[in-house]
Length: 240
Image (tube, rainbow, N blue to C red; front, side):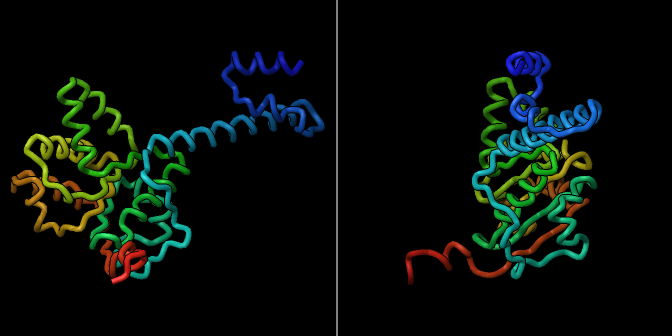
C-alpha cells in the first residue's frame, strides 16, 4: 500500500512528506484526516519554496538580525525597526539606501532583510554591484539581456551591495540605469554604499544619468546612515 501511495504522490507531484508521515496522522474522521494531510502538504511546499528562494537569492553569507546591533545606525523617522525587519516597505515598493563607511554593518543588514523577505516567500536577488553590471554586459553581448532583465523584474527585492566601489564604463552605467528605471514604483531596491550622493557622478561619469538614477531611487526611499569604526578592523587578529 505504501508503494502505491508513493506512486500516486509522484504522479500528482505531491511531496515525499505525505508518504513518510501519513501513518502518523491521528484523526477521528476521514474528513479530518484529509484536512491534516492537505495541511501537511501545504506546509511542506511552503518550506520547499522558502528554501528555493534562499538559494536563488545568492547571498554570499547567511546573516540574520539575531544579535545585530543598531547602536551606530541612524534610523530614519519614516520607518520603524519592526517595519524594516518585517519587510513592510516591499509592499509599498519603497527603496532603502544604507550609507556609511566600510565595515559598519551595511551588508549584514541588507542580507538580514533579504533573508527575512525570503522567509516570507518574497523573491530576492543579492549582487555586488560590479558583478551585476558584468552580468548585464555579458548578457547583452550574448543576446540574453532581455531574459536576464525579465528575471530581475520578477524579483520583489534587488540588493545592490558595494554600490560605487568600482567606476562603471558608459555601457555598464546605462544598463544599470535600465534596471533601476524598470524597478521604479514596481519593486524595491536596497543599495549599500560608502559614497554620498554628490560623489555618484564619479561612478557614472554622466551628470544626467546620475541625476536620473538618484531621482528614481530616492523618490520612495528610506536612508539609513551608518557610523562607527569598521567591525572587521576592530576584530582583526592583526593588532596595530
